[in-house]
Amino acid sequence: MVSAPSLGKQDYVRDGASQIPVKILVVGHFAVGKTTFIGSISEIEPLTTEERMTQAAEHVDDLKGVRSKTTTTVAMDFGRLTISDRIVLYLFGTPGQQRFVQMWEDIARGALGALVLVDPERLADSFGVIDLIEQYGLEYAIAVNHFDGTPLRDEAALREALDLLDDTPVVTCDARDEKSSADALTTLVRFLLDRARQEQ
Amino acid sequence: MTGRDEWEPEAAELVRPYVITKGRGLPDEEQLSLITLVTVAPEEGQRPTRLSPEEQRLIDMCSAGYLSVAEIAGHTRLPLGVVKILLAALAEGGYLITRSPVRRAALADREILEEVLNGLRAKFG
Image 1 (cartoon, rainbow over the protein chains, first blue to last red):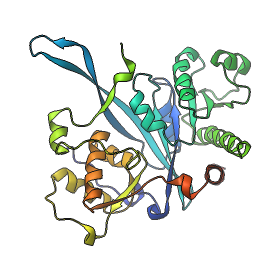
Image 2: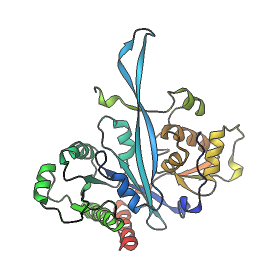
Image 3: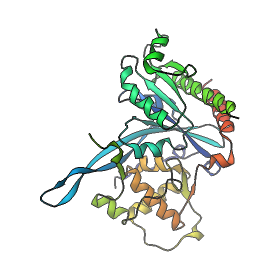
Image 4: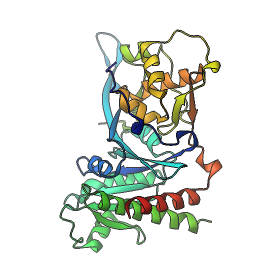
């Protein structure tokens, strides 16, 4: 086992005995800025955990007469935000890959909602991610990772390209900036709260 | 790539993780999710068992407070599946206690979201 660094007081969950853990997903395609986003607002250094996934191969190995296996590793980054003395929020960043369904189920189960990070220059790369989120019935908002911070030139075109519902929030953010990332997250939570109130 | 539904988390397929987990299977997701909080139990509840170095390491890590399952995996750099199996065994042996996200019973989603929204506003303005 790789020896872990010794942990300090700030690494542990404050008031852990009374905290209710909740999670929000930060999803998007490869290199869209998920880890940067999480790092900008997390109170801990973002951590990575890996799951090894296996898949039985199609063919049977002739020499051994057994079905061979393919192994791959899926990594997810996450951070933490202590909201109050009874709620601790985890942010999980994950690529939306359809083929790792089992892992997606673990990540999506019980999530409050999802923030979908999109790159305005690579909109098509976000289609699969959005499909997956809808498939799991998660409510979401779109955060356009927009480095120069100017307002989005054509929100209508983006909505159309991503085939969004009229009430799905779209915000621009700079994932490197704490305030900007927090604003995007706040927009999502406000939307989730509106939805929860409507359902009552 | 065919068969996109066929990928499964691996816990005990490779020799070393298999040895570390002593061949045990993955615990139920309800029992240990990514965000289940874990800490050490008071000593009286423990069944005497011989612990592996990895198990002892997890107990040490959890002795100073609460960490989520994901954080424990992140700090130890062990695969998530292996960590879940070890934690489940340690909880069963009375070494660790877990606080599952039983939020729906305790607090309505609406209350949680209100508190998260207020918390974010207070923190980031």
